[in-house]
Image (cartoon, rainbow, N blue to C red; front, side):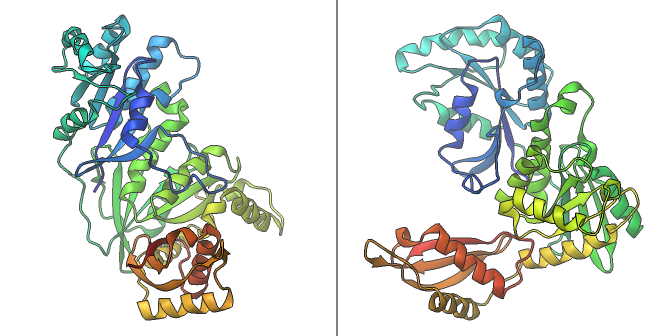
Length: 436
């Protein structure tokens, strides 16, 4: 199921990013400590009580040389398009400004629920500041303080009341759902058409989510698939064409619903920073991943070109060393038929379960070959491990002291597990716990 999305909208300097960081909390991204991953914290997962949701900080969407009010308008439109609930952020110390009224006029056009937040109400004596904000026409204003974290519970309670009922199309577990993500103009649409055209067994086009993604179910060699197509989702207007971060917002929705994610690169242009950002989200989400170098027909090649490109990809995507690489040309159809077998393979690995007895043989053999290091005279002792989840495969390893498990030794164990079992295409996660 797709998580609901909250977007924070408002004029500059009302504290949007501060509230965003407060709601997200001190959540540390899985990929932030991995070399080669950079990401903008304008889109993140968060939770409140029993609710999981995603949240967008529109203040992080910079639109270059746009005039002041035009930029606010375009940021608000991104939120209106993407969000299920909008937090309209204002500044209690400054009162209602002309810019607030401009934002309000834009938000009147949306059919999405709008929750009005008055920030910088730092103590109960300042609550009288909120009354003027009724004039904006969005019902009860919620006094909050980003610097102190006050009032956020009431604000999120109101947001949660407006979360939509989940309306995603449900597919049987046997159906493999995959999406193609990447920068604009890497050839996602062409690749979708080439894959579908190659099979010529399109079942139907089904509206997948309220985000106007198109799901294309089809069957090939007895296996049912659904392509979650993000490629056709860009809307007209400058904001959607020029804002690279916007493509990340769209990609996130598709990643969430996918079992397998194809990270599509442009062979003509080479690897760019935005490619790494988008791929980082798929890695963090724990999805099976395939790297697809498209437009390979446009590259001038000799017998060494492909190997050099593989080396470059491995250097640029250090954290995706498990992901297979496929070179394709949607234009000529070259190697497009290779994509589906790779999808099948990484999906099988993403859902693989390992027997505890065999897993522990591998762990004990690894320890015998390379004993755990000592730290201040104490040695890490590993008692046993067990698999606790799939998609991605997740293992819990019980030890004498969690703090003695250095990330380098954890990486060693992961490599030994990968050497023994075929986990190509899927991240695997190791959780260390102290044995009671």
